[in-house]
Amino acid sequence: MEKVAALLSGIQSGDRKSLARAITIVENNLPGSEAILTGLPSQNHTPVIGITGPPGAGKSTLINALLKEFESRKNTAGNPMTMAVLAVDPSSPFTHGSLLGDRLRMSEHFNNPSVYIRSLATRGALGGLSAKTLEITDVLRAASFDLVIVETVGVGQSEVEIVSLADTTIVVLVPESGDEIQAIKSGIMEIADIFVINKSDREGADRFAAGIQKTLHERPLINNWNVPVLKTIAFRNEGITILADAVLDHQQEIPLKANLNLMAERAFRLIQQEKMRNISVSDLEQQLSSIIEQPDFNLYTFVKKYP
Image 1: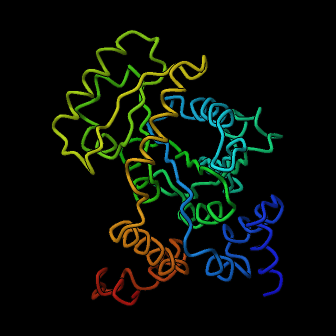
Image 2: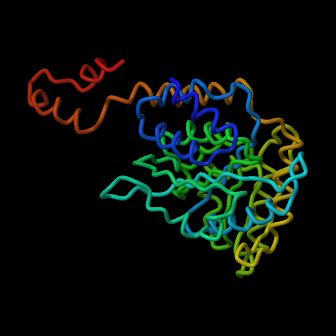
Image 3: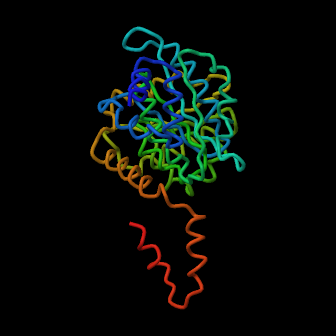
């Protein structure tokens, strides 16, 4: 317990080694994981910015530009803003660890004292988020950053999970998505607090932005927030200042989602993760192999044994 107390103290005082060690313990369910999570501050209002969208939309490049923009601004203490980035990468098929692609694209921030970057493998998660993303995000929030940015792996419509984690959700699209707008609007199109049309120097960007605006008229207002549709060219840093303003405006206009609905959603995911902790497909295969050929075998009877 003394070791955990030291880690928690180090996290809150800004010690990066303590933060990195705590994340490793939580991610891998090592001894002390539960003590770290239950020892986190109960009231933490660090905003979480979720950035999602299909593969190839330029999410990592956009985050890279946003980091530079936010760092140029001051926090309430008059110091440069500090940010943590949790990049949810695909899993390696060999080690099951993160492929670290996003960290490579953000390499210019590796030695930046205002930015902390951590990659996290999906480990088979289909919703764009690893099962441990919520817990690690809470660890990052305890480290007194001004913003925590979570980038999902980019699997398309199933990335709606980000809405249960982020206080502000940014959906990044490209002009080529225009022909697919009807197909995707029932998924990620409905979760955005801010839409970004990246690579907007490409043909059809204006038409695509107008199409999204038209679609938004069919969506009811949430907390009277008018969802902006912004155009950026991230690798040129164009439109980034306006995007950063919109993020901070949303934080001012919309209270952080510390509400009953969001807490219930988070609790559901944590309980689901805890209940599934000791269940694996390989174990189920082994158990099924001895009974699947029995005449009275019933799948629903089999699964009932797992509460």
